[in-house]
Length: 536
Image (cartoon, rainbow, N blue to C red; front, side, top):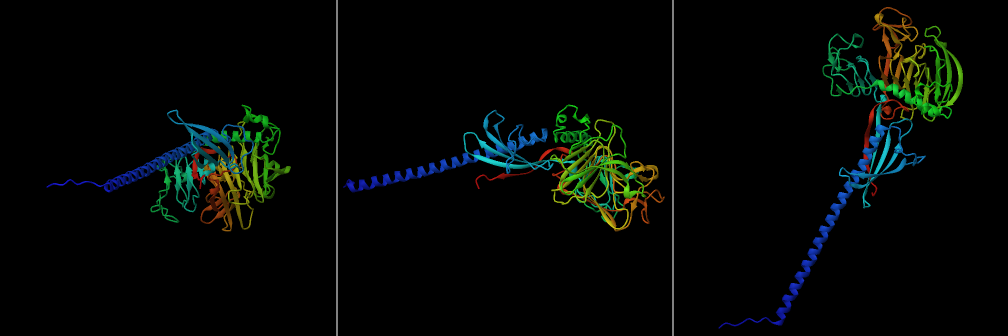
């Protein structure tokens, strides 16, 4: 017989309590799950917005990279304020709306621009990106700089030849080609895939690669087994023609540096102006007539001043080397101008007294005439320090010469030149190849007679800096077995003009910290960048 099971009231209560507990637990779990989902969605959204802020900040850096490429001296984003920069961040703040490719305003980037100063091309740019409608920001800071002619140990518009006893120090480049028999410490590059070098730069009548060495050379480096991964060719050529516009810019800079000539700087024909007014930054031509043996001597002092002399005559013969220049003092202890640029509308002789502490560029050119001026190094030319705080730039319309009376006439010595040397149309050289047919190294006003030579092992020459030359670059000449002029005889190499024992070093501080207003070779690039943690 069947019996019906009846649930008691106690059983009904148990089931109801269990059901309620399950529902509560489900609600709690669902709530927790929804909260986790919401937190994750919020985190994802925050990350998306944070990445967007970072992209906006990067856009600010790229914008100012473009801006500097079009106006390399504007550190105020096209504005006139503030008059003085923030001591830490520089000029700013400059706020830009960031509009994406779909014309949607995504937010803003705020710029701070801090030029390194002292003539350096390096600018530190800080960009703060913020997403529209949020407090989310990211900050990116970059160093932006332009390569100049001082970015090379040696750069030439002509072919180069480094003998097996010469080291190619620093980056070297030729618009023609390089015979590199000696060691190299950095990249060696040529604008040509191949070229036919002349006899004077190691040629043999045959075509050779853009950078090459003679297979017969086995010491101090073996041509056949040496690494050549840092020999690059072809590369983009270096445009020496732009130096002319750079000289014009430096002349305008010199005009603008003094109230008596400032009005000339903004004239359309500023670079053809030849005022007779002398300032600390602008030194006028001696007269309308031009002479290789007349101009000015600038003696750079240790305390960031210079002494100025008229040069009335020059004699390069050995006998009067002790008084080779006819000098007349113009002024002493002239403060180097705030622009750190001295433009001379004539030939310039330069030396330091005894060293120079500061940063300066001396430019020489007669831009209003067909005459091309030279710069002559008339003695030691030395920095006080070699850590980048000191720099000497020489930019000549024609050539830069080491005078035959610049080194000590006799005895043991280490003659030294520190600086970035740039010859727009001519050479950077001791003497010049005055008589190529007879292999004689003459000088500016007497090219048929060999200049003085030093061959003693304790008579040395150290060059520390960089060289940029349209034509020849050499510190000495081997003039063969026939005596000529004042050349010194060496039993191995014959007669020598110049200092036989040399040591050329590249000043790596000049790579992105060239002398003031030194001509650049390319546009601006990002040297380094990092994110600035605004919320550590």
